[in-house]
Image (tube, rainbow, N blue to C red; front, top):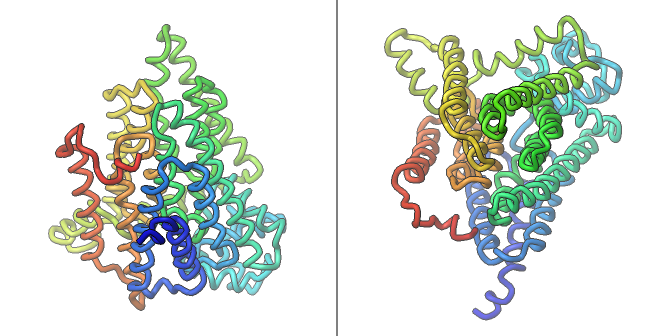
Length: 456
């Protein structure tokens, strides 16, 4: 017993490394039972690692980086999006504009504009290859960097992109710690993100670029907290230029500027300046790709997520079933247009009627604004939760942490051949998430601490 107590950290790290290694190099996403075992085992181990080392910041940082490095030489096994990333990067490397062409067109015409074109197209799949790219310019820059360093090897490109994502996570730890200190919150909140198995597997393992987006977002919020709003605007624009999601937060800055100024006129002037800098920076970053076809292709690709795609949805699936009862067919074309409108109205409501005067309140507004969007969207891929998780560490809410644990249930769809969702698993996932959210909002007493909060 003394042996386990003395070497508990070493044993936990060893088993984490062992499980991550198996996950990275041997697991197939169709093996749902193994997937669940590894997933919940890693969450359990992470819990004890957090609990046993609440005061050892350096150890937890080292473990966070070490666990990510396990994936360095592996090919992602839960997502195939990275093949499109490599395609886009190599297209730019060869002098093509990735926003103006479809991989499918080149393959059908037996024209191969990039190295390993057929392998990349087969890897990304017909659905991905038949749509215009929707990745913003800084994301494209990451893809280009992978092409610059490895233009003839898929694994080489994967390694380069993985290094970029790990570097972004290190940056998130750095600026996240500083922002937590400024907000008088425990710096160990950052490990609810950094040591989270969901983050390590979905981001580093499966090469989703949310960490790069969040690196700029957290840095931007840190600069805003320092009242350096010009730099905050530029960094927020960079965040949008990796993923478009931070655009949803723009209305929420209204009260931050208006209420922070002695003069109402000066507040409006800075707010307008803030928005002008953001949009000017975004336009500047898109400028190298400008074409008369760019806007049409890009908006069409983004619009597909609202008109065509369905996955792991919440209230949308309920609305869809109601549509089946009354109309007899899928109502995604209608519901997909209504959901974004409801999100905008919700964001405007909390922007103007909620007092977002402090950084904590502003981030809380961001958390619930984005949550509303995800609760009503037609498509909820697991990696989308990443933004909710990072925002939650600067608030008192932990439902995104619970969601990051149970989101694995959505992968049951890939255990079927052909791919098919089991709505019972989706129902279990959202029952747990909404149950915990309701508990946090309406039942939990201010003095009562959850097991997760006891770690902080």
